[in-house]
Length: 216
Image (cartoon, rainbow, N blue to C red; front, side, top):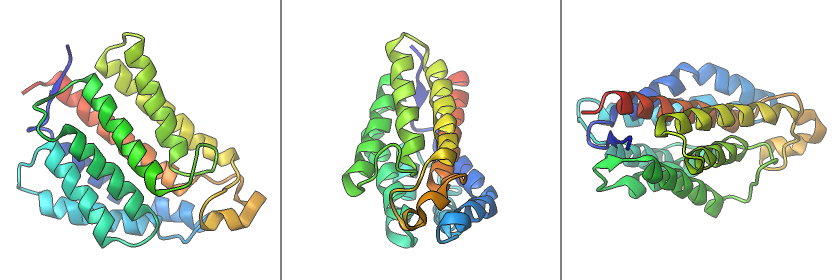
């Protein structure tokens, strides 16, 4: 059975922070078309602060996710801080104390994060939000594991479905948040939250795949 080590995988969160910071301008540019234009700035600020606290600490994946979630929930503005904050803290709680993370545990982690977001927001799939990325990604991971695919293949399925979900927001009318005021004018623009969620899930999946390939 494929597993990866919780203790030695904290660097996944640092990689996630690097990708978000790299995409700061892009995320804000997308957000500026139909939103406040601060999504990339706020996300880069939060992920950057978490990365600073984690550097040199040799933290586990669960500890690193908890640090990130806490920073996002308590120290950055915007609507996305609490949503991503609760997702990452739920991720962290699910794998806390788990030594070896297998596909079943990873799936439970994804579901806990999704449930956390759904518990504090009213959005659903089709409303042009990060859920248009997260829900298809989680469902694809579930299906792949149920079909007997390897953990590694299920991670690939997660990324492919998440990115397809992100792209689907181009053709959606925003139903939630500031962009919803634009009605039909929100068509033809990617949702910034869906885009950042695709970056996060891809980095998480690639980090997990690398850890599976090089077990400590």
